[in-house]
Amino acid sequence: MAQLLVTGGAGFIGSNFVHYAHQHTDHHITVLDKLTYAGNQESLAGLPEDRVSFVHGDVADAELVDKLVASADAVLHYAAETHNDNSLDDPEPFLHTNLVGTFTLLEAVRKYG
Image (cartoon, rainbow, N blue to C red; front, side, top):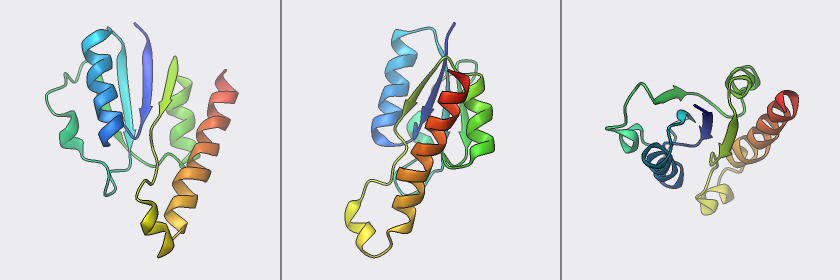
């Protein structure tokens, strides 16, 4: 059974993928989500805990991401700040998640192949 890591898996697109993967594969799925305005753990309700695990955390947390990627066979990256109009008032969360978070994830994937 393959191990999938889904970042942003409690958001709209990510949670729909998690439900799809659960229904159509026998993979174990680990969801990493920071649960900001776009994420809701209730979107994962009803999924079996023996196949889907949830980790509340930040995709830019290198230590956490490194640990999760080390045990994953595949990574699907949906974590992002998405309401671009909010970036006009405060661009920092967009830089942190979309750039630093993606870079952090890529470095972990590169490390573990």
